[in-house]
Image (cartoon, rainbow, N blue to C red; front, side, top):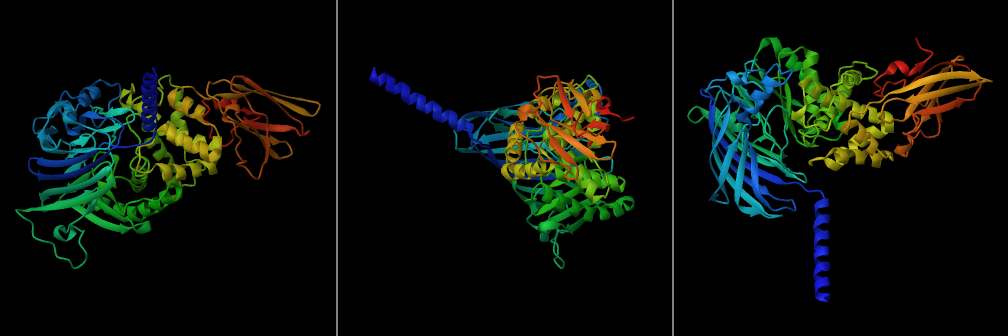
Length: 611
């Protein structure tokens, strides 16, 4: 019997140890070595890939998954059918995929795959390659996968492709067999239907052979600039003659989770020195109509980089490239592809947004399929703040547009929780407003709750603690709690996991014996603290701050020039709140949240004494 209990006790200890181990943060690692040879006449290429996969999880893996994104650009694909059946298809896609000919479609076709030299069994299922391993990968072990594949670049439709509307030859995004992410939630082998990406951190070593007339820009540091030329070589260096009319460009990218490039035979390539020794590269078509804007963009990009360095954290690489290509604006590792035939302010605006993504997605690498609002919303917030400064817009609330967008969605009857998978929104419009506008309001309104200084410090600490990782919403809100001293689980839950709305109102104001009695009402289901601004007839001002009980903290006075009076907490379950103003002054007007940082869906009931 003692032996039996001893065995049980040992098993309990082992189980507890394993459970505690799974509680700690970990992430997988991949290291890629790839070579491709591009035929610019057929837009086909052959590729080889050696991938070293390190399993840092506590789990034994008996299969892996790759993304084959180019397969989405084929008639009958999930992307094609979804675009033709959603209520409001993307204008860039619509039914275009269904009309692609055999020479215009995209594909990635693996022709061989081995694990540690042994052939594997695999199956292509749309945009996902399902691979059964010969030998499971144990925790802490690595395995080497070698793949050979054939591919064809699709006609430019969405993000990737050839011959864009502005004439860019090759926008090579998501162009290689890409290992899917495995984390504490398991595999994330989502099909490519419409949205964005999630990748594994690692190092990339990539060689691209292409016609000598083409200039390449993208992820990574060019290792052989003297051989290539094209604006990369040092003054006085002579470019080597191409072999068989082609150059092989060799790039190395350390600690990224994607690799992107673009190529064209008419690119102008400029290098502009940015802050902290970062080289800013610009690749754009030799088009006289856009050249001036692209030249003027360069110092503005340096200003934007400095702004993000200051307000989030230092950009850790020594290079960033702004490249004309793609179909709008899209962020990638160490670069962005943007359309370039824009008015100047639009060109700066799209660059600001995509450059900001270098922090909110490419350094703080959230899962964009599950938490799209964290990258798009945070990026929208900080890029709007940056544009207000860099372009001297003098906007008292740079987030006003996001608040309007959110208000429209919240009152439309068509809002879905932000926890909805990015591909599962009923419309592109609902996705866009939820991800961009509501995501930006999440941050701006958090500043209202905990104070602007605490929000600023939260962003910096979030970057410091979570860069080069895969943070989740809870990771961010825990940082905000540590910085501010507030309990914020209610805020994260109601704002992101429900469609509960904020609606507070002033229901009555009465005066008696020199006192003013005020009753407020909570109408919406989402709780919030209240800043009640009051102006008296003698011209003096006062703000009555009503803390939210479940937040368990009080913010500092954000209006040092105005009297700040802290009142007793308001518990959420109580629908009304009464307060008395006993200073003997006559109230001229009052308003809930005069700064308009509270995302109240019905501001008409927020004021008294205002026309």
